[in-house]
Length: 228
Image 1: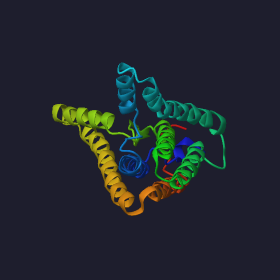
Image 2: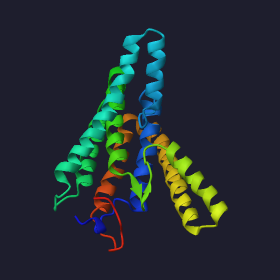
Image 3: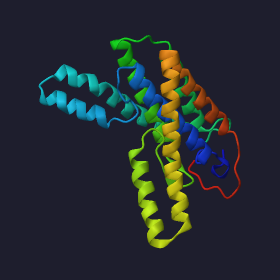
């Protein structure tokens, strides 16, 4: 696919991915052991606490999703390198298909300590694939599985707008805050769906990724400037 025709950086794509990101965080927190599997900061902190306590087995519990996240980054880059010139499917669509399959598998793992660990590891893996494969919205570096960086960048651009009165800075700031808003919407939907459908609710997230899969077939104008 020509990079000028790809939809991977469109705001609509980022919005759907942010909804999925928020959904997965709510899902793992509500029915998979009260953890946030999207970002690894919490796991790293908890691993450090367990190590300080001398609980090495407990620390090992947290290293698993961290390693899964690392593996997702490596695999994402590998798929990009192998399939970046594929004319049938964009390499990001291959990753999305991989994510969808993994989430469908997670939906059929019943609740329980061992299965929750497996599911949270799978979600960490999926989120690392997503955050590595979709890194920009309209040229802005934006994450769709976590909000801290988006909040910092959006606020920084808002300050720049007040200092320079640049409409471009305001527009870019709104894009960051817009992605955060869709993440919140995804978390709210995830909370309602998970309480209604329990572990099977993750299928809604898989459906959201399927929508993005088809969005990537849409072409944009020749002025788009996206990464391949």
